Length: 234
Length: 300
Image (tube, rainbow over all chains, first blue to last red; front, side, top):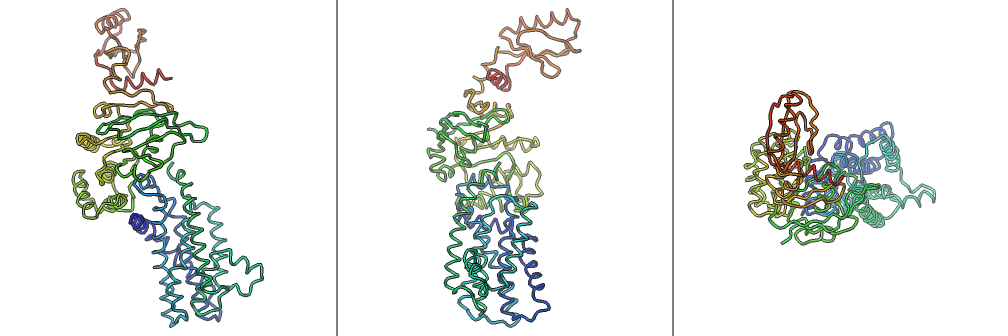
């Protein structure tokens, strides 16, 4: 229950902020429009990319914001809560936010008259798809937002954008090998599958990969946060 | 029964040895003052005792629980008031208090009743739904005290509770601390305000350069200063008073002596001979501040 209190605090403090919502919805929407306008592309192809991007941007947009704002770490740490509880609370908040924000493009897709081919995949996928992005969020162990981080964020965003819209099936064997190593690639793969398109891995394999990535990122997040706590206190 | 116990605590930050074998015990129901100049190791000690950081070696127990091995159990009976207000600025006063109540595992109904009681007591009930961002420093500190007391802790760690506050807020907080002390709760008080420590503490530890210099009652510490009486004298013009144990403090000289009559005569003789006018002359018993400075001076 203590992690729920942390999650509630995170949502009120960090997630319901203009920049977070703007970065989570508007940026992917404009990237989507830039990709869509002037091309004759099927709606399911575009929607899969849009959902993937929205979830990724929404979940990662908070990480550079949350750490510098969290100047109250001493207050939390003096309470009877463990570091893991604080991180789980952050993850629950991120998960709730990610679900809500990914519903927007999903609703948009339904408004365009789109019907998903893999219902089960779409419902459970909406939840599971978020996990790696959320774990990435948790990895942010110290205040960011300097020029260097912005550059990394931009290049990463460009890469993710490209990957979200370009399926990996046509890639070289090296590219296919790399596919498995990145959670951000598995993420749109399930989205594509849920929209009835060709996926590189089977849906079950994608889910397993997502779960593995989640566990790895979670463990890494706890370790990094524990190490970074001192720098956030002093 | 011992509420807080530190045993040979050591802590190093890079090349700086912040704590060197710090040991002390605080009895249950005691108000324990922890004094020291800036950078002496006070905050590091408090952070170790409250489970925020781990010592490099040594042991610390709170309520009988080891703060490293049984951190959560050690934290359950404590309330911590940090020096700087750490309330969430974008949350309301009520939301901040409820957050802390949840982290202490309090039932909602109990937490709400206690929060209402505390907010009224500290005079911020009317602002309970306002965001903390707009609070004054005094209000923030009163809110922090509400957050500290919400779980009705048995052991309180108060770090500079009245630092930089207006007279009204400072007095309100002091009165509350005395009230808590009367309830036989343990208070670990870090402060630079010697009057505050003198007024409230049963015992005082002085720490300097990471080492405990002494632990004693405020009265015993005061009695350790050179003489039993301090004579304060100020002259109408700038003079050089060459007397044993005379210290220049602002526009006055303070002379510590065991024979005030003889010392006053000597001061008057000095004034006659030098033609300096005595503006004021007072005798007073040494203050805790005198003892503090003297002990630090001896320590070098």
